[in-house]
Image 1 (tube, rainbow, N blue to C red):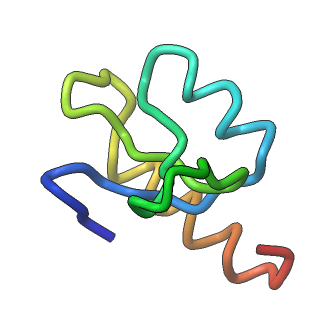
Image 2: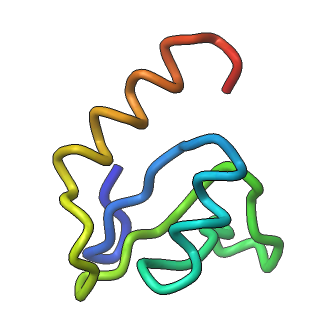
Image 3: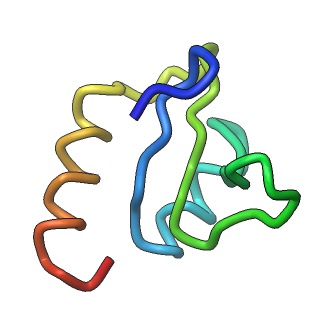
Length: 65
């Protein structure tokens, strides 16, 4: 989903950990508590958003999300 001009993705926690170190931030849904499996991708990230969106879709489709 797109929130405040940032792509928010649901990914496995280890993947969010890796991406949060330089490519975005854990998304907190404006509740002040970051979510383990949600990443708000930085607009300046060089990670390809289309590939990350496909990765997110595949993760959610597994039912483990």
